[in-house]
Image (cartoon, rainbow, N blue to C red; front, side):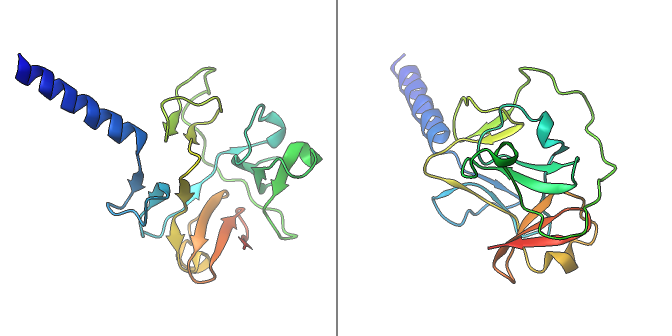
Amino acid sequence: MTNLRYATFLMGIMLFSVNTDAQIGVGTTALSNNSVLLEFGSEPKGIILPQLSSVNVTGAAGGTFIFDSSDRSVKVKEEKNNNTNQNWTNLTLNSIQGKLHGFSNSGEDVAGSASVIIGSDISSKSGIMVLESTTKALVLPKVSNPQNLLKGSVAGTMVYDTESGMLAIFDGSTWSYWK
């Protein structure tokens, strides 16, 4: 009986330590450092943002990224711009309007449906994937010259360009770069 209690105690400690210090690598087994919450491997692929209209996104938290289908641009929700455009900042910096992609979600959004929460057991924020941490960050997929390597990208693709050292965002027509 003592061995069973000891094993249960060790399992509890292991589960607790994994839960509180969870770090996730997608396409990699080695994370760059302890400040990483979610990091991607070196394969030249990007994150594809959801395509929807910012006017239809209610209750979005700061740091939410979308591809806005109404004006065909990549946007981030920020609290710094005095409620201009409901605090959505356009990250697409070109005069050519982006292009909508033809992909669609496989089903309807369901109120109260499950989300993936990384870094915590719960979150008050809505989103399909929520990174919940005050000490760890998201590391974007790293691609050298995405305009050359990611020829088949769709609107809303986001990567870190290792050649320029900048955030690179594709709106379906043009790559925009942010320092």
